[in-house]
Image (cartoon, rainbow, N blue to C red; front, side):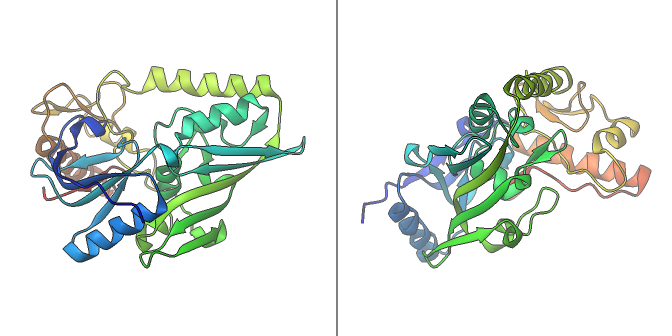
Amino acid sequence: MSALNIQENYPMRKHLSFRCGGNARFFAEIESIDELILAQKFSIDKNIPLFILGQGTNILISDLGYNGLIIKLGKSFNSFELSDNGTQMIAKAKAGVILGSLSRKVSKEGYAGLQMLAGIPGTIGGAVYMNAGAYGQEISDTLTEVKTLTEKGELKTYSNKECSFAYRSSIFQKNKEIILEASFELQKSERNILEIEIENAMKSRREKQPLDKPNAGSAFKRPKEGFPGAFIEQAGLKGFKIGDAQVSEKHANFIVNLGNATAKEIAELFNYVEQKVYERFQIKLEREVIFLGDF
């Protein structure tokens, strides 16, 4: 079994789309399942939590740091295989693959099912974990199975149904298993139509989202009452700032870093938005961004 290279007091801000936050007590880049098993054992022996980092596009780490082990999947987890019979394609992607890269590749081959997800900046593992979605399409729509590593270091396979997918939710948010690979069943379509759908989705993102400023994507999940951005805007919070953390002037369901925001300021802004929306509409907003550490 290969050795595990663990770094201590590792700065995380360069790995996070918010571009702020503290250090990880321990950090390791993983290149094999053997190393993942060693990482699990290390966290158990130290009695600390273990967190798998994808692209860091929906994470906020406390300025005080994260008292645990953060692991990032290396290049060996960044490949996918495609097989098709002319009418159907099976895409098997490892957890470190960028969702947008897979989406564009299969769409270019003329297969539908992931095209609306092309603009999501996260990895396959993160997308499955969150049941990521955009423009009426979710990762779970075409997913057939997921392979994981259990806390006991055993390999396990889940069917779509066994993943317990719901809106921005999956069983993997509860069972602490590490997602290794996901498979998708895609249907033949017109390549030019798929390319147009991707371009329209990307155009919408550019026009409506603050892509020019550090952010972590949608701040809050959509409640049953409607779109969170609308409630935030109606509460008069669009453009509201705490320090260098701001409710985006472009889209109210995005919180952005204007340049020098601290994780504390961003967290305080999340709290303030939740409070004001509840006071105005009696709606409890649920965060889509994952908070790590003490705030």
